[in-house]
Amino acid sequence: MTRLAGRLAPLLFAALVLYGWETLVRVKGLPPYILPAPSAIAASLWTDRAILAISLYVTLKITFAALLTSAVAGLGLAVLFRQSRWIERSLYPYAVILQVTPIVAIAPLILIYVEDPFMVMLVCATIVAFFPVLSNAMLGLRSVDPGLEDLFRLQGASRWQRLWLLQLPSALPYYLGGLRIAGGLALIGAVVAEFVSSTTAGGATGLAWRIIEAGQRLNVPRMFAALTLIALAGIAIFGLLTFASRLILRRWHDSERSEDKEES
Image (cartoon, rainbow, N blue to C red; front, side, top):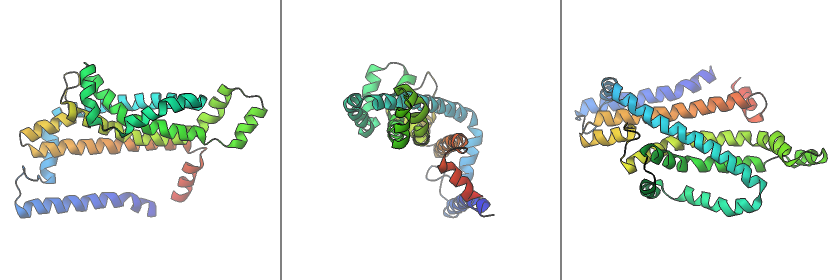
């Protein structure tokens, strides 16, 4: 019963917020170009479903491509840093620089050197999502039990055997945690990149461009509809990555096994 109530609480809160929002718009008589009611946003989601669905596909394509690129590059670079302290000291500061530099400052430079619009979006979104994967993977690779490290050395395990059989499994929970963060950041990076570059990906337009277009036409309900799809996409990505993480870790890692015990 407690578990069910915990899952229903966010839905009930959202229903109360939407009801209050709808009531406020109707009582105040606010026009849609000032503040559309939730019913008007829902109507826009239905009537504009064709163009919004295409834009959602474009945004998600960039997001998942950036997430995959970040997942591979972040883990690969973390493994490389783990093998050589000198390489880490030489390259890690540049990863930090990319993380702390606003993407809105980098995007115009990327537009100069990258001609393909899709690659522009992909590079921008990857830069935003890359660092959490790298930092979490590095933390996981450094969090190996020293006793197990000594045991592997005593057994004559090679460096690659220690990496494959000990360090990577130990880093997996941290790596999956970094992916959960990177999923939302990849979506943010894809949206921000399209706002900044004001270009289309391969002739198609993402949700950010739909927001710009709707704002120019004062079609505020469509703006809110596109924002709603972005928010729902972010929730879905986080939920999907969380589910995948639990599915991978629940049989052997204490973090997920303890959560299962608490819920039961």
